[in-house]
Image (cartoon, rainbow, N blue to C red):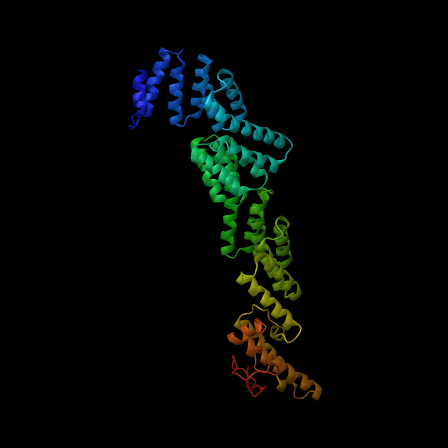
Length: 455
């Protein structure tokens, strides 16, 4: 029967290895005191990537024959592969005590000794909470035990404590390539994605874990938490798209309350609340919550700069846009535009500001500008001041001309864009322009405005 098992094992036919296993199971039942039977089955289990069963067979083989040098040596090899290097040292000693000249064992001994040394050192560092040093020692141990799921998982847990989440993904990914059903690897990998703020990938791995073990408590609790946060955030996005800004802000803030330690996501949630809040002080406070988590979080820096834009506090606006630019670098066009707009507005606020002349915001529509012009033109038209003193008439004419000039610039897209960029609007910049009236409410000639009053 042993020969049949050998033939099936080396046949290369589909199912040959499993057939060999069946035969050897029968052989061992018939002849349990033959160490070779266990050794042959060890090789079959190894081919099937059943390391624990293979190790059990080697233990049985050396128990039946304690002087089985190759059995002790192969046990050390397998223990090393599994990352159980301290145990492998014991097997090495047993093999060499039987045959001090056993070549395979002599060749293996330095790797086992070195790996065991690194693992003992890693144990010591872990007990002290010295995670950087423990990571380093485990990395060295893995040079000798590069196929050990146990060591990769152990290093992944340490790297989670170090915040090295992409490295955690790499380590857990290697384990899953060896065993796609490894629940520890699925759980650790899902947690790393969660901490990176990638909830979709986190839930995907958690669902995979629950497919293999529906009752897994740790994965189930984690899955419910991520699902709750994800659902709440998406509801906030829906409200925001509907223009329900207050409701959206509440949903975004609720997300951040689920897990206060979920920093990578919470800074995004607080920034989203900042973006939709209409009260600038409340919005700014939300952005500050995000920046407390990460002072260089670009999205929050941009949104807080925008709150100063809304207030037309251009000095603070410039300062915050420049902070964003320092983080983004010069390659971010939106941030660069923000800096230029704020600097132009600051410059104009100290000189002639057409928005202030008309009393409109910088984001005013053409309709807003037209409405403001009509109102002010009625108020300051020289005909209304004809009976006043010469000084008052002069003031009215000046105001009326400024109103007309502002309406001309802001009512013309090209001129308005130039003004917003801080560029000269008129060739000689100062004293008005000579183009057509965008609202047909005034006429001008040369460098001075001459208006026809209309209602």
